[in-house]
Image (tube, rainbow, N blue to C red; front, top):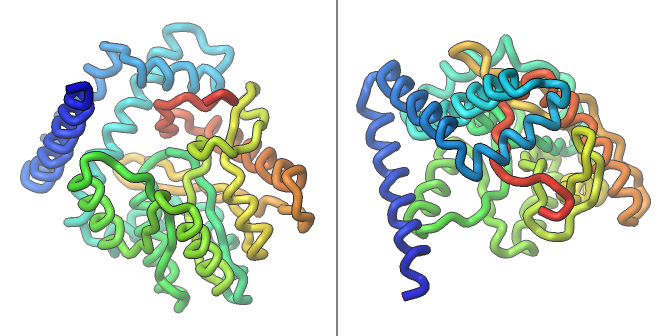
Length: 305
């Protein structure tokens, strides 16, 4: 009986996602957008735990904001988060070439970051939960193909419950052209990521929150935080170029801002990894500060998280 609330939550979540896929694929885009915006506004007014954490995280980005300014920022961020989900539900039915064309004028720093691939060197993009990272991935797959490079990117996903929902998300991301490995078996995931990078391919990892419990303590947006060591460690082991990337929304289109390569020391030590993770945290902070409403961090990022 003690497991019933958890199972009930999973069933409700599964039903909600299934309904989202059905609605987003059948109703006019404008109608779906209004529905999701209303849902975001309602969630903002209810001010549940996720919205409270989002407010605390955004307060780090805008420490001088008064209550009214922070209220507006949180509202925009929740609408941005809702847009990610409504687009995720509709994305499998959209034309990848149309997405690429819409995003291309707003893809800043991509061309320079892809140059190492021509020399057989892998590229690792570390990104926060921002904008629509799935659309950014579709854009990147198309851009690799356009340049005559291996049009596959490898990424890692956390397991979801219920299992049926997790399988659907796996199929969804694989249909977008991604090689998806699960975080259930860290050794298997590590082998897949290192193999892709050593072969001169591309890996994309969300890296603004540590879920392993083995992250590195850094200063992030002016306060202590713990970020994953994985991106820096993988870059060190494989020699890949490590770049911060920040997907954003640009009107009805999409964009991404890719930062300069993060230096990764050759020494095999936690101290050397910590330098790279701190540099990555600094880069994330600068990118997020440019457009904080597209940062969808509804979880704690403190060092004790």
